[in-house]
Image 1: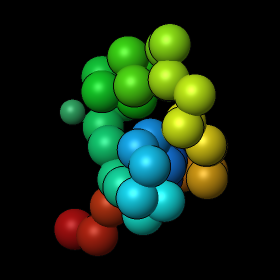
Image 2: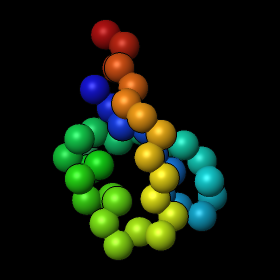
Image 3: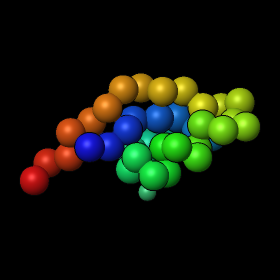
Amino acid sequence: MLYRVKYDSSGEWRFVCSDCWGTIGQHNPDYIYGGTWKAQK
Ligand SMILES: [Zn+2]
């Protein structure tokens, strides 16, 4: 399971794992949560 987020000024959607997702949103004014994304097998 990946998390779809925006977290920089580019406004691009990024996909991160749950570990990264836990830290990315902290102290980040550019953070936007876009839902989860099921990884293709
Ligand atoms: Zn990660």
